Image 1 (tube, rainbow, N blue to C red):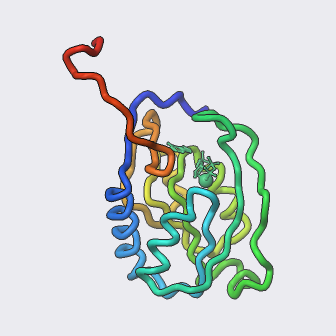
Image 2 (image 1 turned 30 degrees about the vertical axis):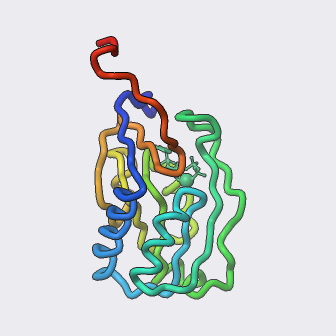
Length: 166
Ligand SMILES: O=P(O)(O)OC[C@H]1O[C@H](OP(=O)(O)OP(=O)(O)O)[C@H](O)[C@@H]1O
Ligand code: HPA
Ligand SMILES: [Mg+2]
């Protein structure tokens, strides 16, 4: 069971771009890759950075929804599969790069890995439960940390430190 995350790890757009580019650097020695399959929606953003850096122009999506409510994992639904005519699919995913923003429990990753067992699976962030399913990642965070992505955040007033409880 995934413990309720207690620590917060907010990520800015600058930080995310740096980390996604660091992922591209790591992947540059692992290819070549004929195509990217990104796991929507979170995988769309790192896929945009990585495909630019590695000059990959064939991009496919696999659409998976798992966290229907904030921080609560529900049943995992595959809303759209991978096109059968994508080069490499008939070979089990050899030469294909699978990208997501993170692995948490590993549930999403294990479903997609079953579809393309020979693909290279990459994420920007990884938590310990999901880490064994990932071939390449950039930063590990603890299982009790919730990562706040920049597309889920907005600017808001912060009360002065002196007025906060604790
Ligand atoms: O390792 P897991 O426990 O399966 O969690 C990781 C998945 O959860 C999030 O996706 P989510 O289902 O929230 O959908 P989204 O990408 O559309 O935000 C995240 O983008 C990963 O795909
Ligand atoms: O830590 C997380 N942050 C954002 N989305 C997520 N989906 C699973 N775990 C996370
Ligand atoms: Mg996702």
